[in-house]
Image (tube, rainbow, N blue to C red; front, side, top):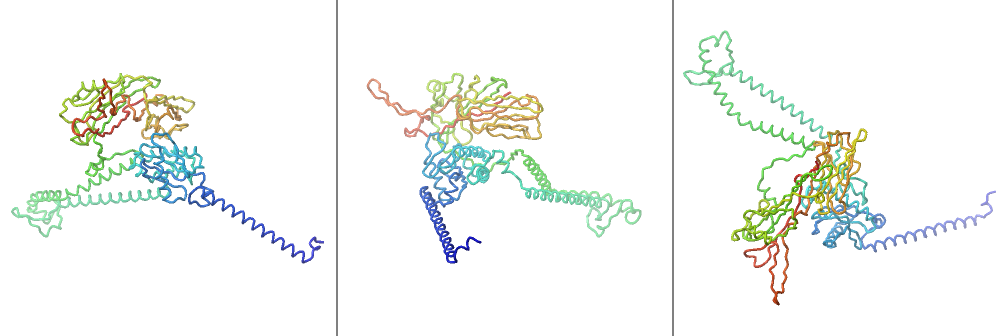
Amino acid sequence: MNALSAFSPVDLHSMNFLARACDLVCYRFLNIIRIQITVRIAADCWNLKRKSKWYEVLFYDFVVLAASIVSKSGKVLVSRQYVDMSRIRIEGLLAAFPKLVGMGKQHTYIETDNVRYVYQPIEALFLLLVTTKQSNILEDLDTLRMLSKLVPEYSMSLDEDGIGRAAFELIFAFDEVISLGHKESVTVAQVKQYCEMESHEEKLHKLVMQSKINDTKDVMKRKANEIDKSKIEKTRGEKGGFSSMSSMGSRLDSSFSDMSISHGSGGGFGSGPAFGMLSDVEPINTKAKDRSRSSVTAAPKSSGMKLGKSGKNQLMESLKAEGEDIIEDVKPTGQTRAAVAAPTDPFTLTVEEKLNVALRRDGGISSFDMQGTLSLQILNQEDGFVQVQIETGGNPDILFKTHPNINRELFNSESILGLKRPDQPFPTGQGGDGVGLLRWRMQRADESMVPLTINCWPSVSGNETYVSIEYEASSMFDLTNVIISVPLPALRDAPIVKQCDGDWRYDSRNSVVEWSILLIDNSNRSGSMEFVVPPVDSSVFFPISVQFAATTTYSGLKAHLGLDYYILMRGVFITVVPVNGMIPLRGCGGATPRFVQRTQLITQNYQVV
């Protein structure tokens, strides 16, 4: 018997009512819980002090909000947002960043009540990540380092103009590194490969266009050959017959111009003596026609030059397609000259040192030569009556030599560069690097004073050659844009790079691998790279060429910066006139002239032999 048969219909109806009542109570209870969750999310949104939706709180707690490049004045050059943010909000966040950066402080991040700024200086710009406060700071720093390596790859110059020209390429590269606010596991080489990939449709379109161009060229050649043949046949016909009759030197056209009579005909006009007389006159007339025809057709030779020019352009395009760097000659125009930024400061001092160093592969210095120059550029003619007060580092190995027009005694006694005749001004103008005032040279140095040393260790193992390269930088200099070029044997494919501190690029045309480091400072005074190539002799990997730049020099030469001070001498205060780099000899009303100093150390020929 069924168990429910023991209950009456009234009891069954009551049980059904109770079951529905329980379902209703559970449904109301779940609604209450859902309302509490919604209220909690709304409270979290209020605590974050931003106009966020509930899914922003759930999903945007650990992401990168935006990646931007801004100037030190706060101008936004490039910005890529990875969450749903209004333009006003992102502009407000980026505008507040320059006010939070402390001058002269070595920070990598700044936290506010709402977000975290993770940034890195790039010359006169800032590479900036705007993240939530709950994001992983280590992962954000790794993302920032990756972006800092990509920016020089796509921007030729790290200034506002260079970033503006490469804005779209930088955004595409940023998208390959950051996806939905999270970092992708990619390298610089992979990002460049992804951004430069060609689609199948594009390649097919190029092949179709190239085939059409080739067909057009073939048709053009056939037409040109037909035109040449017709001209040759026409010329032969004119020389073999006659188209005019002459009498006593007069030249009159007749109706026989359509008739062609050969010299070998046996009858008609060709057999009479009159034809012999006409044949003596005809070559003269024909030559005159040939001259007139050549003079008339001489003008279209310009079209032949155009064909040659287009052939040259095709050659240049093919070389560019193979990866060769082509520099085309462009005549300077007025607009090009005007585009060069003119100096705005009255005085510009330029200190430049060039290195010519040859290091031995087994250690030590083969040759060392440092040559430095100090030049002065004056903008206005009336400011030419000045003297330059300088300071030197006191290196006894450096020998200074002044310009013949500079007062050498004044320089040796007071370190002031002034003309022998103070009544004459310095040359002025905006062109060039200014006038040279001082030169110096240093030819003795030990290995500890070399900015960068390179150790290369090739070793053959079986059918492969393992090459380990290591660099060590001196603590005296912070090097920028370091490029180490290692020659390789002729290879079909790029070398297999096992490890690299920095970036690398293989130049297949010159068979050279280039190891580049953007900046070498106290954080990376040493680094290494290892790659594998087929078995070759170790001498193939030499000489190794090195390029870099620095803002610190061996001489330590700079313009003197003095301050106002007083000396108590025998109970009397004596005011000492301050010396502040530029000493005016006329005008200025006692004010110190404003000047700019530029200092750089560059490599002219730096090799490991």
